[in-house]
Amino acid sequence: MLRFAPSPTGDMHIDNLRVALFNYICAVQREEPLLIRIEDTDKERNIPGKEKEIFEILALFGIEYQEQQLQSDNLRFHRAMALQLLQDKRAFNCFCTPEILEAKREAAKESKIAYRYDGACENLPAEEVIDNPNPFTIRLKKPTHPITVSDIIKGESTFSPDDIDSFILMHADKFPTYNFACAVDDMLADISLIIRSENHLSNTPKQIAIHEALGYTKKIEYAHLPIILGEEGKKMSERDDATSVKWLLEEGYLPEAIANYLILMGNTTPTEIFTLKEAIKWFDLHALSNAPTRFDIDKLKFINREHLKGLDPKELSRYVGFADEDIGNLAKVFLKEAGTLKELRTKIGAVFAPKNVPDEFKEEYVLLRDMTLQAPHFDDYEAYKNYLMEHSGLKGKHFFEPLRILLSGAEHGPELADLYQYLKNYLKEVAK
Ligand code: GLU
Image (cartoon, rainbow, N blue to C red; front, side, top):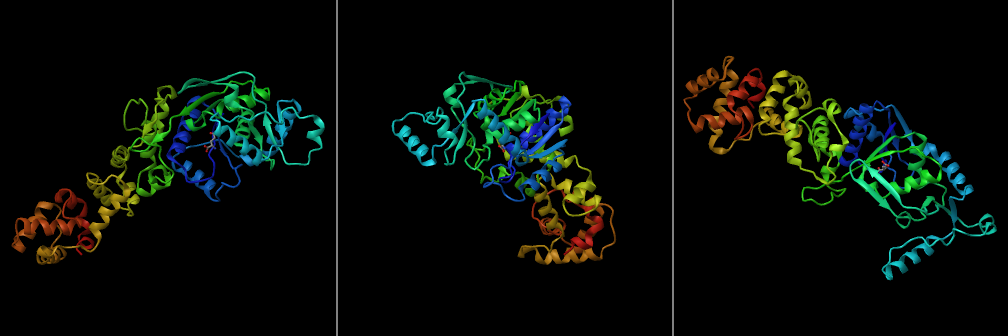
């Protein structure tokens, strides 16, 4: 089983979506089920509604899964396994208060040494533990040997026992830490491959240490994905709009284009434009670069345009707020200039909106508009144009500029003949 384990603590990020896509692709390729585990154990950071949004986004991107789970539903297992580790002396109760720990952390900082837990509570006599009324955390005993993580993308990294340290499994409020809940849940779900962000690479030896302490010997494969950097090569901040999947969708990037781009980034692929279904045929985690990749919105727009070009005109028409093949084809004409649905809606909206005409062409505009409203139907642009020219007596700039505004609502744009073929049945709505 593979798993995607988002936390419902904010808008879904493109990094997260990329993790979800790769898990989905690999699950299908390996013919293993995919579990969606909502990691809701950090109660303070959970945001109501985010869980629903995660599932909506998965559906929109065609990410199918076989199981779903709330991490908090496993609380009884987290608690039971923490008790087992205590019994087996692989973990211990720690009564150090946050203030004591903070003071020790400060002292380490002042002496310019890395802070490590000093083992203060590791060997407390039993009576001090049993009769102690104070709150306590449960810590895993620092491993006695280094732990090597073999990663499909990052290669091998070895972590010393000090890197791993005696870390906390259960908080004083009897809720598990991320590392503990995650390690227990992965074990219970029999996870075979963990694909997640490289932000978690330093957590992996801790989770392996938990598995070892629990006597769990299954070899889990890991793939930690390089983070996606902003256009300037810096880490993208949560406030960068483009990191939010919701924002990209609102801007009018198609799910299939976003997926295409996220799979293409830092990857070697047989073609540049592809669907998720096609990617399943050739995707290989081993082909991914282990360097961070830069998010390039222009590239995404290019890919989006290619996917928009491939849409059925009726479908495209619906995306821009109509239900008509002609308008879908009209949108395709505008694709030379527009790269998102939002931009297309603006272009098409301008065609049907009352026109903003510069003073120098106002008179000519009114003439051409009224003539268009009264003219017979012309199937072809040349005939329409000749009719207007002949009856208005206008020519050159004073003919073409107001005509362009009449047919497109803009002073520049695609060939009028290209627009006319899809607008000829709408001239009454266009001539405003
Ligand atoms: N819940 C974690 C996150 O949202 C992911 C944990 C994991 O994949 O192990 O970053």
